[in-house]
Amino acid sequence: MTAPAVSISGLDADALGGDDSILMRQRRDHPRLDAMMNRYLSEDLPPGEPDAVWSDIVQLVFSHAFAEETVLWPLLRRIAPDGEELTRRVEEEHQAINELIARIEHSPGDPRRAEWIRQAFTLIRQDIRDEEDELLPRLRTAFGDRRLRRVGAAWEAVRATAPSRPHPGVPRRPPGNAIRGVPLSAFDRLRDLAPVGGPATRRAALTAAGALAAAGTVTLAVRATRRPG
Image (cartoon, rainbow, N blue to C red; front, side):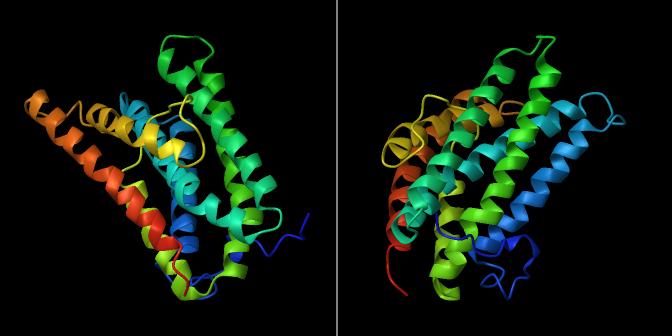
């Protein structure tokens, strides 16, 4: 295996290609997610807030991971000699997180739920370490600042249209993840909007229309990462 590059965890924005680079976008999400998990586990949350925090965690985890699998890991497989091995391992982590959170979501009254949530948080933190220490540094080594910013914009565009709930049956790699995952994002985002007032049918129509546009967004975003420079 190729010797790992320096972890991005301790590097500043200038070293990572600027505030809009993919590396800084990832770095902003990771501590935000860690803070959410810590908040969920705290003992002084008012009634009802744990459910809201949990929902925020789930939405961030899955939109973030889908964009990685669609934009970042295909790039890594092209540029790194050990890219296949590294991305296969992180995809296995993502699949384990998907399956565990799906079980949690489908078993609200199960007495094992609290333990499953702790297990999910452990897996998520391991995934963050692997990405910051092993996968993302290879993008810094391979690409200049301009390319890192372009990849960051593509990742952000895909994340905005990604599924926001667990779907263990969706493949972890393109094109299968986009073909099966993007349509599901319509239903996920409708579910995310469920507490919001307003006619459900109108929300459903708007969300479904957004999913159709999302498929085009994903395709264009991925193509943009392939241009040199």
